[in-house]
Length: 367
Image (cartoon, rainbow, N blue to C red):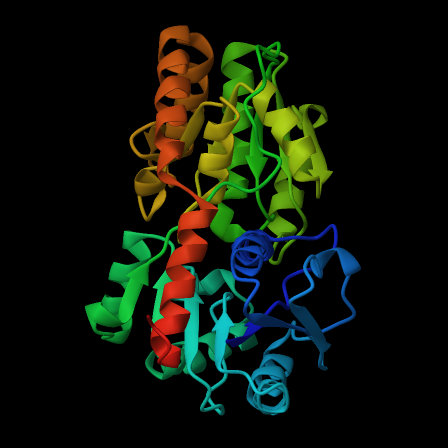
């Protein structure tokens, strides 16, 4: 098969969650199927490290698709043209979007419908774009893959898509995350993700302030990840904290660096309002790091019962969970043990195999 893949999120040293998903899935699929040709479609010059096998052909087509109008141009004009030119048998789009103007059989990966649940946190033009195109993308796709049962149920409920058209292919653990042998535990919490309202980062700051005032501990709070959007309130609250010197903004870090930090952390804070899955949860569990996460959306599913669940809208509850996980060593050890059990469910090989099966199915080449 000639399999075209939307790889616009493969950006060197700036891999978001969608970028990691694309890279890990394609590493397994490309190396596992040397008989096929994979056409990686980029929206900007790419790093040579992403062309990791001889059966990959790289194509760059403008414009860089990072804004609503450019989304439409790239997906509705550039993509149909390049799919014809490269004679693609099937198209895999792993980042929620696809082209409505191509007849090439398409498998679409929808990670979440956050724009519906947290629409006020998304820039106005993007919200309009998502609202118009996402239901149409779901109907156009020959098959939809998603990462959790929670997101599958959401797609069915919001768009009226038939159950049989959606498969939960899951995800795996990104490279670089590993459990070290007995690192010294340090006194800090970690938040892993983009600074944006959906991640509930303002309440994380306020909960940390409550925790610090009550305990008097020298605990630090580390934020790993890039700046997102609508982050003015976050930085305003941060500047007014009495404990602001104990909050560190680390920006992007490699997986190896994040793994090192998680292995030594007191806990991960993943208390988003909404997640399609919640990848930081299992990354932390892989590193033996206890997890405090939200009791809503997909996060209980992702954590597999191996986390301290809190109401993300209750700042005091988040602070109490931080106190509990610091004070209760038995609970911490139980969360670490059960977290390591939970991650056995996840495998990029399984995800890649499931997606490849769907590509065969929609292209009519299923054995």
